[in-house]
Image (cartoon, rainbow, N blue to C red; front, side):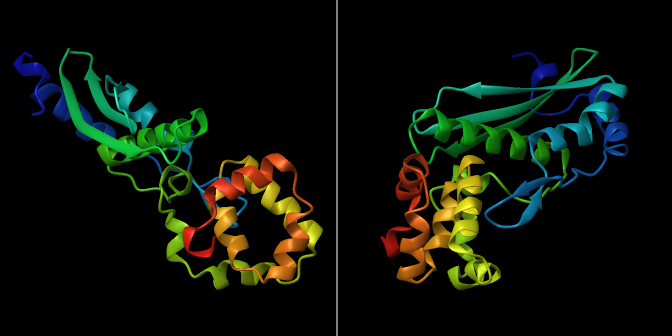
Length: 209
């Protein structure tokens, strides 16, 4: 590897990156997380926040992936038009399940957090709930997650759970349901389709299984 491709920024790309950083926008939280009734900035929003400013200053970024048996490993690399580069370090994210959905969720999470870390922006978490074996939502007491739904009918709850699972947040939906009393849980469970039930079962909190 030549000196221009070391982890130490060369003068031209360093100056260009500082100028670009002054122009970075906010990573807007425009996506809805159905299971948690919150908004978050997805990968596209994070790219939108920085890409125009980087390109305007002669910088493009790529995200390299590396062979990884347990999940995904990503590294964000900034490429300057002069040929100089900044490599930002590898980020490993384990896959919650060894299937395309598990790896896809981990890849999205890794790409988003690798880019936001490299650029110094900090959007709210979202798909990390699906990418991690220990969902961030587990830090919130289950009772609090269930309380906003107390006025919802079983059918409305089932519809919301189905939407959340389809959006890739089976882990968060399972945690919310685990806080319900058994009669309510049983009534909602019977309204869910088999595919949704299977995904929820795979993500059900071990301490309540």
